[in-house]
Image (cartoon, rainbow, N blue to C red):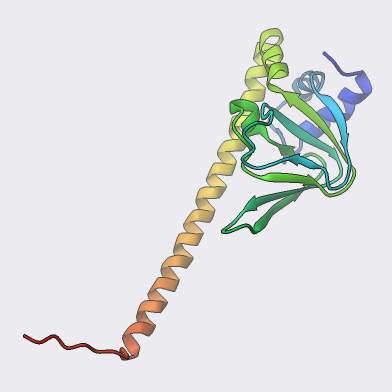
Length: 186
């Protein structure tokens, strides 16, 4: 364990919020919290950049205080705000597992305090507390599964809106005559 008791007592309950890993027990969360390091981020600091290959991508963050803006690229060079995350939210758990480049850009909007868990610390938990590590990984897997289900639901709704728009366009096209009618000579 790396953290003092007061830091563990601050981090552990936030790991148990609905926006983090609610399925862990408090004792499991305290064990995991003991391996996390706390750091401060200035307003407008880039927490991580989307698609950055050369950056270290093997960690996740738990927001202890402050707000972090999550953005992703849309068409062209414009960005879309995906979310603003505050106290008790996890960020980057996918990269903790696979070290792949980040899928979004995260920027501190205020002074932010985060607890960081690296893959090497996760491996240490796996060696020293295998049953806690298993429950921790199951909690992350459940969180990711919930997000996939939510994404699937959003895709279904978007597909339904798209289909309704297509039907409306077809109806409008059938109602008005074409400007140019070309007859083919036989």
